[in-house]
Length: 66
Image (cartoon, rainbow, N blue to C red; front, side, top):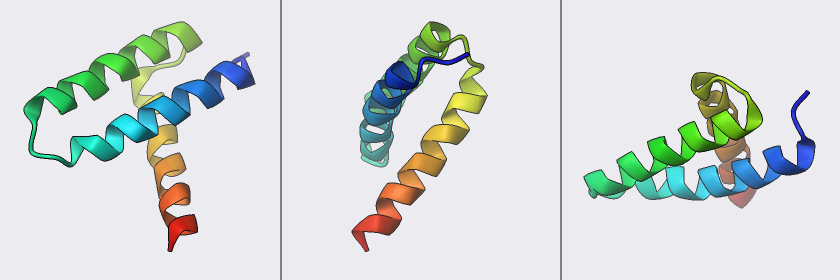
């Protein structure tokens, strides 16, 4: 079972990083992937699954801004 508080913290951090990845810096892409893998490991979740959750969370946040 995933700790909801830890998941919320992970999603908050990863959404911010993922939004920055759209910048031209290749470094930011590596930073996002490293953070994603670290959080996935801490949460015992597959990185691909966590990335999907981040994408959904990002879309919801973007929708609320418009």
